[in-house]
Amino acid sequence: MKIGVLALQGAFREHRRMLELCGAVATEIRTPQDLDAVAGLIIPGGESTTIGKLMVEWGLLDKIRLRASQGMAIYGTCAGMILLAKEIIGSDQPRLGLMDIAVRRNAFGRQRESFEADLAVPEFGEDPVRAVFIRAPYIEKTGPDVQVLAKVKDKVVIARQGNFLATAFHPELTEDERIHKYFINMMQE
Ligand SMILES: NC(=O)CC[C@H](N)C(=O)O
Figure 1 (spheres, rainbow, N blue to C red):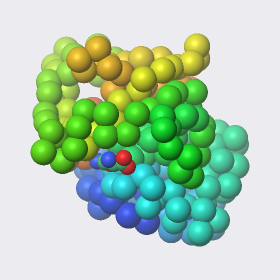
Figure 2: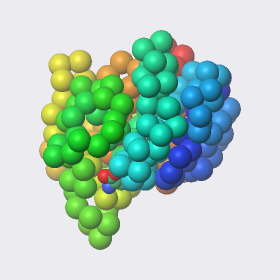
Figure 3: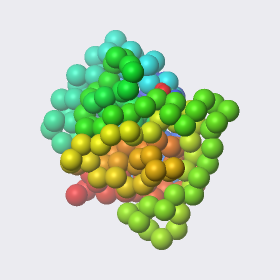
């Protein structure tokens, strides 16, 4: 199974490495045609405004929406979570608008407020998930079809809606493969 990593800006190399450690075939996505060969797509962390603008310029926004409507699974981390949201609080920046969530950017603070936390995520097993938050957003509102998988300080930081998965933090910056494996399993469901 081939999984794409959107490679316009941000931490896409780290996601490629994690997918390969999980035994998946990872490929960098830069054009709409690149999307034809993949069963899933990871949208990495970075700057959501930059990634969104490049997605529009490169014709990727509409193609990703089309492939999502055909069943392609998508996982967004941090900026990727922001781009998946229907609502980005206080912003009209470009987005995919595929998940019924309202996201607040930089909600936990700026770079100097970046932090790590051990999350209890029953979906991923007994051991806590070491979550790395960098200028992180959080999910302020979720629609009825959205499953909340974990919270930090009572704010939603992992959510799933059908084929879409979003985390406010960066598992690709740790050695913990569970979330990437969970995403790979989503494609096999
Ligand atoms: N680590 C990240 O992806 C940061 C996201 C960035 N603060 C944004 O709002 O787009």
